[in-house]
Amino acid sequence: MPVNDVKGQASELNSVTAVRLVVHVGVLSASDDECLAVPEPSVGAAMRRLAPAKAASALRGRALAARMLTSIGAASGLVTRSVTGAPLAAGYSISITHAGIYSAAAVCVGSHRLGIDLEAWHMPTASQARRLGCGTEPPDFTKRWTTLEAYSKASGIPLVRLLGKAQLTVGRQATPEMNECIRQDRESWQVANFVSLPAPALHEMTLAVLAPDHELVVRQWKETN
Image 1: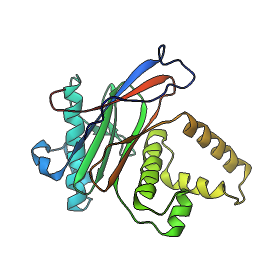
Image 2 (image 1 turned 30 degrees about the horizontal axis):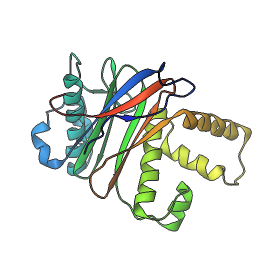
Image 3 (image 1 turned 135 degrees about the vertical axis):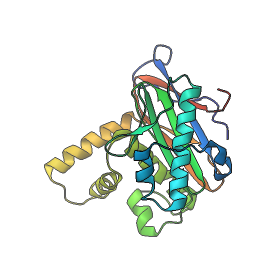
């Protein structure tokens, strides 16, 4: 599933003068179990609260991120967790996602706001499609969902809040405070860079990066990188 140096636009800067931000993206499936690593005890305790299949997929994503880090020059592939559960690694930015047997990770050098989401196609109800402002066809709905989820990860805005704002903007009464949140969210959305990535069959995957002063380049991660 090649990504092949997908380039995004740098906001308000000529691409010649913009600083390049290279984000590496990798995908693993359950057939790649040799990639699994035994996590540190704190991560293991968190994983034990998940269903076995979800725990295996989550561990695969963390192992993938660790291998990607070391392959692009990190001194350590140690992936820890923030208080919110987000993956962390000193000097690097990471986002991890998983859906069924597949796990994916996005990593880049430095401190940047990025998010990745991978989802299997979902047949929405008419109400769900209206809430997301998209069609009812599974690819359309799932692509819209991954866009929102990836943006939620990158921006730190909870997905439930994004969905709530979507409802408020189509005619419901909102307080001045809510309107200010909507304005700020819209400004953040407008400078976000979204890349629809090649995904496994019957899946959609989207990367969101909030780095308007950078030229975004997305590269497929390979073990030989």
